[in-house]
Length: 305
Image (tube, rainbow, N blue to C red):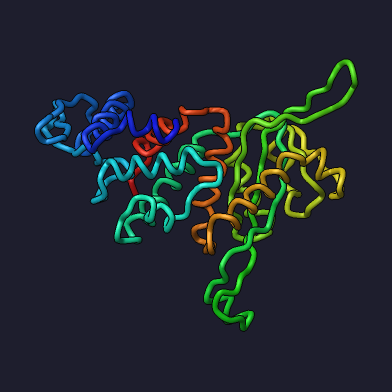
């Protein structure tokens, strides 16, 4: 979807509300009180009324728009900006594009959307052949880091991130050339470089034990063989980076370049949210205009917290 088709499709607040209701009706509404699934629609109240207990809930209730005072049009414009650009927008730039006076509601809205992206991708796991490695991302140093390093304001530190790519090895029958093609990615911030933390994040990301995983010989991967069918390791070198772990390193370098060019600074507690947005769009790189509608669905199915 380009900016012209968006403008034709969503002309005012009502058109955005109607589209949101249409998508929510497809998913289904669950009563907050009795968990019933049958509802009346109260058009004059823009609310649902449960047929069993008569409890009402607004169109926003149970979605990431819950308690938000921003208009549906503002949310839709933000989802459009986040979903139709490869590099993304900072909250400050979105505030400027939307012409809003206050920064805080925009910041909260954007991070809620990024969390919804992450929640949606957490519904899916990787399977088959998986590349796995870790990268260090530059983040703003915390107050604790400032005291430890005795560094001034604005100083930076590193955060460890586990990157995984679901890849397939294909061989050209005529030339014999072997290449890796990639489908989906995962990125999870690790609290430390210990094996236990890596294992927990890894176990949640894979489908089942019928998986082949490629890594380097890092000591933090010693227990991965307990969770998969085969764990293959290679010494980290230039060839490993270009062949065995090709897609993982492409994702690491592209995400770092994306962050540096778009955001002024990132705190560690929000790094996962920025990764959510990058990976969400990367996994849907072939969706075209559908990615906007998918983000609307993700905003409905998210828990709203």
